[in-house]
Image (cartoon, rainbow, N blue to C red; front, side, top):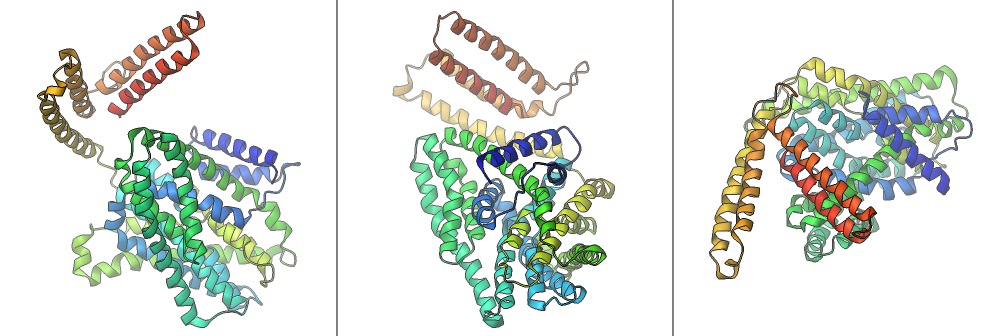
Length: 526
């Protein structure tokens, strides 16, 4: 892929992702469809996924940004269902899909079939969690889906390595496979634990936001490479480091947090958009290598594997949800009660993604039936994204799950802000009594109190009545008026620059000050 092709991929996928925000269709599905359509356009080059790029260069930052934004406490509270999906289900799907393919495809050996099973075992929950957030799924379901996607890739990659060793005749047996699995999982967690504290201490001591953000961009690659260097799971190392840093992000300088949030949002947007577009663009590459497989036979193989993938997830999810609850009073006490609707959503949200395709492309050419593995992986990824992705939103609406209690969340936020404001008021009173602060003019002290009062009242105002003429809450009106006032100031500053009464450097300083005030007004009211 040359520079022009890379630019075209990023620009095109970003444009489609931006368009998706104006439609009811989830962005991942529209990107895959656009990629499929573009693959038929004359002159569009073949974008072949290179596993040496996807796994070490695209997977770490995507995992990192997802894990940093996750709640460590929520993940820990739901560790049992997450482990059942990210480890238990992936291993079960490897065996179920592999054995089914062994029975369906003539001449396919069981070790090679298990390679296929491991390749398409891990769901890619990016699309599922995007839909879940858009439709307001309960927090626990979203946490479980997100937690599964953080760990299941490590399980699948390790299972793939074990199955591949058996397929090429260098397997060390079940004992060797289990030992390799333990080395990868325990080693990956161990590397993450070794790195997370030194990296966090370094972040705390760095005072330059630009250097901080440079370090932030390097962290996922350092963690992944360090773990892979010792033959451990780079995925788990990245997740462990990211969860720790995200949990303690409040200890980092505020300027770093503001820049970091913007940087990682941009990185995640570009990478996710490009990744889903790349899935669709693989069609010519996959079809070109089919060779002896063609016609109704290969279509039957694709349908059979897709059906087994979908059914196997339900076969695992329902017992994994209810059997432990029936057997353990402790689980029933610790975990909230659930009905059949939650496992239906989790079961139907098993869409596959780019990790499966990247692993499939990494299968050595010497492995028998490699082209068929690649084709069945591609059809399964496309099938799950299209069939399950398009039907998941109406399914969620049809099941009528209880929506988020927005009022209760706002009340909790208001109470938390009230307690924090009370502590800030007490601290301000203590500081104003100290001799070194006695020269602070009373108007500035009053301004501190006013800002604090505004911050405390902003959340409560969201619970108030809306304006009958505009439909705006008091909070919305405040934000709109603040924006209009700031825009008036901004226009004056620009006019002064244009008349050469101030220079561009001073304009940038003044505009940044207004930008921060506008951001503060927005944050206070959202």
